[in-house]
Structure formats: structure tokens, C-alpha cells
Amino acid sequence: MTAPAVALLTAPRPVDHLARRVLRRPDGGAGVVILTFFTVLALVPDLLVGPLQTAVTATGGRLEAPSTTHLLGTDEIGRDMLNLTVHGTRISMVIGLLATVITIILGGVIGVVGGFVGGRTDGVLMRITDFFLVLPTFVLALILAPIIADVIGSGSVFFGVRTTLFVIVIVVGITSWASTARIIRAQTLSLKERPFVDRARVIGAGRRHIMARHILPNVVNLIVANAVLVFAGAVLTETTLSFVGLGDPFQPSWGQILNAAEEVGAPSLGAWWYFVPAGACIVLVVFAFTLVGTALDDLLNPRRRARR
Image (cartoon, rainbow, N blue to C red; front, side):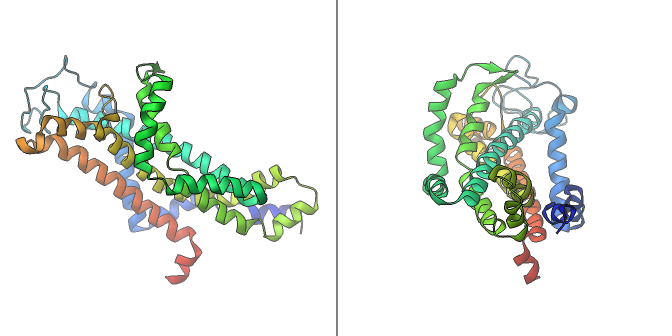
């Protein structure tokens, strides 16, 4: 088989073609619309609701109900809840994105290397993976968060972002990669037995070349589909960590807003506007990622296509 033919066999489906197929599906299209909406909120919060309000710049009274002045009411120090919720979008989405990048890099590299190299290397990598799989993610996150915060310093600022944000990113990332590694490894085990990999070995291609040029391109679609669901899980984990007090009050995320509402006793006071908007945003984002993930799984998983 000629080199162009081998390249054709190993080439992944174009990303833009996959995106069009997802958008044509009702579930995929609805998920993309919701995610686009929240992406806009995360990118330009200042243009939509103004700068993030603080105790000094608060414009309302204590726990004011929704009105024409404050559409979503105010918190215990008079800050506009619409302002806080929109600005919280950026923090939650950024944490989810960065944590997903860490998860995909760790899981992808370990999965591809373990599955392709095999032997003792695979055994060691999979035992480490199994260790992270059996540990309760949230418990591990609770243990790691204060340790990492103590190491890098929770009060420092890098590029205008407090290190508390990076602590949560690192914690979520290193507690979520194991399932990704297992999925990628399973696909790699199948791919390394394909004829085009044997031909690459025959012509003298090394392990690194084969993994980078032949294995990785064929698992990209699987990585993308898994990343969508990992993103949703990262947002939920960040929310939970912030809710139990491991967030940063100076950079409010949705989880931090829920934590503040619980500390103030907003549910018992009937101040539903304090926690419902942030909770609804979390549910919508996770729901949207689930819709897109399901659409990608239907399109990329041959077993699910066969059952349809």
C-alpha cells in the first residue's frame, strides 16, 4: 500500500465535519446552543453586567428580592446577584476547561503509552490508574486541596488570577484522569494490531513516531467525546469543593455563591434568589455537556450506531 493510502487510513475525521454532524442532531444542537450562551457570559461579563461588585461597590440593600433594579435580587451585603452569577460563569468555566486539559493530557498520554508499549510499563501505569480509580474522587480532592494550597501559596496572584483557582484546577485535574486513561488504552490496544501499524513497523518507524502519527490521530475523536463529559464532571467537582469552603471568595464561582448562600442561611430565610440562579446554571451546563457527549458517543461509537 502506498504512503498516501496509509495516510488516508490513519487520518481522523475532520473536526468541522464532526461538528456539523453534532449540530444536525436535536440533542447535540441544543447542547451547543446552551454552551454557546454560557461561553459568551464567561467571555464578556463586564460588558453584560459591569465590573464584579464587591462590598464597597454594592448597589443594593441586604437580601433584597428580585426587582426591576436588581433582576435577581441581592446578597447579604447588597451585591447584585445577576452580577455575581454572570461573573461566576467565567470562574466555573475556566476551572472546568483547565482541569479538562490536565485530565486529557494525563489520561491520553498514559493511555496511549500503556496500551502501545505494553509489558511492565503498561502494568505499572495501569496499577497507578487503578489506584486513582478506586479512590473516592471527592475525598482525594479534599485531602489534596489544602496540601497544594500550602505548597504554592493560596494568597499569590499569577497573571491576575489568584492561586486558589489553580489549586482547584490541579485538584480536579489529577483526580479525574484515570477513567480517560482506561478508555484511551482500550482503543490503543485495538489500534496497535491494525495493518497500518504493522506496515509502519516494517518500514522502520519507531515507537514515538507510531504513537504520534498513527495511534494518536485515531483516538482524537474519542478524546474529544470524553473531554466533553470530563468538563461536566470538572464543573460539578469545582462546585462541590467551593460549596464546602475550598473556593476563593474574591473570585466567586457558582459553587462559591452556593456556599455563601448556605452560610447566610438563605434557604431558611426564603431568599431563593441567592442560590437558585447559580444552581440552575450548574444544572444547565452539565445537562448541555451531557447532551453533546451523548451525541458524540452516538456518532463515534460503532456499537451504538449498530443498535440504531
